[in-house]
Image (cartoon, rainbow, N blue to C red; front, side, top):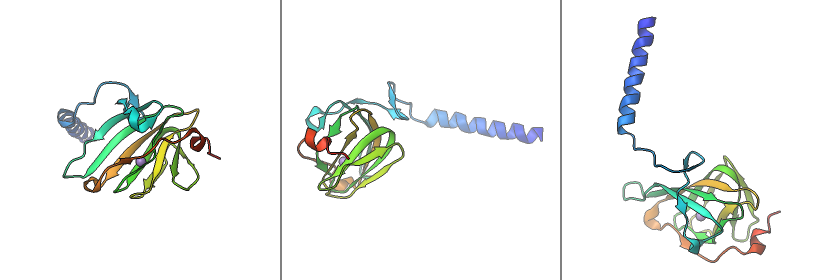
Length: 160
Ligand code: MN
């Protein structure tokens, strides 16, 4: 019994050691949810203060780009489309998602959004609580994002 436990512990220990040697070093800096908060997003495409950290760099093998995006209260993206669609995985907070011509949908931790290819939409925080989501841009060989105009205060305030 003791021998089995010891063997298991040794195997696990060796496993963890080899993992630690091969795993990429976690980037320094503050987290937002389980992943890094990153840097300020370009002001040209967002209203308010937004942070973005690249998690997966787009390449020809995966054709997928992933980021951790943090919207401070009131912050949101401009209207935009993704030629190949986008998946959002909400990890923290409360926010909004809206497709053109549809009511605003409230987002909470654990929500999954599938923005269909070419469907105009925006996403962001609620007025009083921030939102953090992971974005997955898939099939990036078809395009990643095309930016439009800012979401007006009137549009943003239309949540019911
Ligand atoms: Mn989007």
